[in-house]
Length: 335
Image 1 (cartoon, helix red, strand yellow):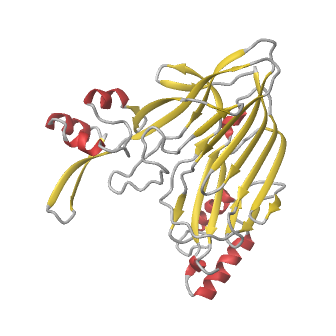
Image 2: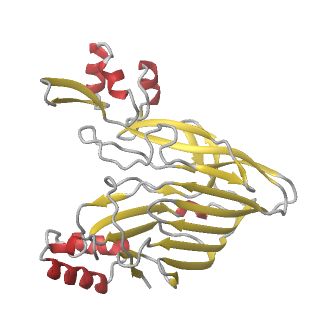
Image 3: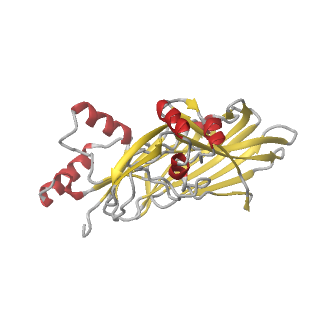
């Protein structure tokens, strides 16, 4: 049964950003980090707390063999793509090595993670090419445009011809300017080597600031959507009729479509949690609405309200089949 609820707050966050991934074991293959299944380690417990300001994930792993197991535990991010002309992506930090302000502990002690960085353009790995030219791999990092502009003309033409960079011309009030802009995406994978002793639970905790997508109004009941677009949007977030009705009532009262609600989107990749020896023993999800009067919708069953702004889902022997998509409709000020 899909879930819906209400909360209120006003956040002005940037445009849609990437989802974040679950923990998985990993090994290394040509081209970078590759996720792999393991039959030696169980995920006994996962507790996932999602809010607009912070995501926190607590895991309990157990080595089910009779010997210590040392493996690479990875937390990969999806590709971070930047519009070369607008640059409209919500990244909590402009640090090219830590855009999501990660904090990780194992059994309560901080972990120093290594980071794999790869740059892609239309599925082509362009990491080595950019590195040889001395261009930073993060398309959102400081200095990347200056580095592209400083390249010899032949290298600039080559990057533009291969659509790795684009020409961006504009007048910002100081006369006509011409620059190269990055047209590639970045993949980051955080990883560390972890030894799991036989039989003893190991606690791993991640905390980070999410990338939150936003829209200046709401797509719920939007008149400009085609029937198929509306169906797909409602299916993604399991938006039920009562939420659509609430938005329409607010719109009629305010005299504006959508009732001045603003959409916020938080995505989380659950499906990599299926990479362990057995199903996740206990999976607990908490979604924090932040305040009572806004609307929230996501696909789940057995949802319980446990606090004025918090909702809980608990599954036993859980095998994630789909990723999680949370829609939050921020109510207008004064609601």
